[in-house]
Amino acid sequence: MRFHISHLACLAAIVGAVFGAAPPVAAHQMTHVVFPGQSIQRAVDAAEPGDTVLLTPGTYRESVKVSTPGITLSGMGRETVIEPAGKKAGNLCAEAGNGICVMGTKDHDVEGVTVASLTVTGFTGSGVFAMATDGLTVRNVTAVKNGVWGIAQERSVRSVLRGNTARDNGDAGLFLANTVKEEAGATDTRGTVVAHNRLEGNRIGITVRRLRNLTVAGNHLTGNCAGVFVVGDENKPRAGALTVRDNSLVKNNKSCPKTARLDALQGSGIVLTGAEDTLVTRNRVIGNVGASPLSGGIVLFKSFVGTTSERNRIADNTLEGNAPADIVNTDAGKDNTFEHNVCQASRPAGMC
Image 1 (tube, rainbow, N blue to C red):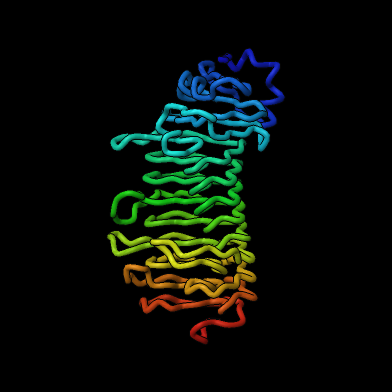
Image 2 (cartoon, rainbow, N blue to C red):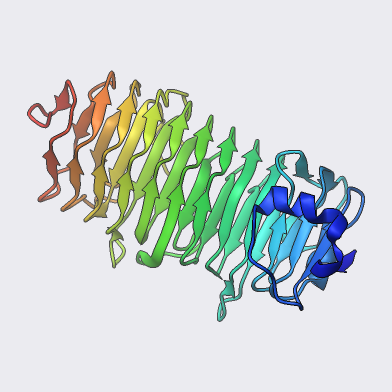
């Protein structure tokens, strides 16, 4: 259903509850209201830049592909639930096993899309997957029990992932990468922000892979096998030049078996592997305990292709009760510094 916003007086309270007070909108902007049993994809395909597709509470069984710039796809909170269709849905998003896909093209990013205030659960791939986006916002989304990633993006810039919950997903709750299927150097995200999300019970809470120039701040991570991974390799430019600050990483002690790409995981707070020029500061890292080679509060680890971590600064963090130590440096990289951290034990000694 399509309505002019000026004619939606009966939905004013609903829209206000979802979006808060908002400035007046241009006359051409439209809200497409979808009810359970109706097609989200049909409403998205009808939307034009600046429009909103508003999903009322209930369960929707489909995968949705968004490629129109500047549209908002929003539910009305966790009670708006998107699950896999019982039959083949017939779009590329569904064929990849994903719930919501925001997709640009090889030559052109899709700009200014927002996904907000809904739950996406039970997909064999990712709950929300984005590729080739510019200025994507994903906020207040709950991604639960998806087979690979909760919320994921690649080849994307200037994103904001804020206030989301990713729980019990097969790999990372939040996954950000340059590209997954090709070997390539780290890309500049042009200031992507990952902030105030809650990550619980995933294999890894947040993975940042082969990226530069972004901030991971104010997130709460608990019950994962590992909290935050910053991952680089031998490709150029190197991964790094980013900030991990003001996060809370508590008891990420779930046990996950070894995979073809990564050792067994348990009890890792923040891990830097093959990264450079990264600032890790003002994090609270408590009770991360395990026997993996990557276990510990804050860990510097040579990448699995032999690339060392260099010129990283670990400063002003509070660490307690992590094992085998609060700070672990098994990396032979140069010019990594450890300053003003409050901790009890390090390997090697002398970093607390």
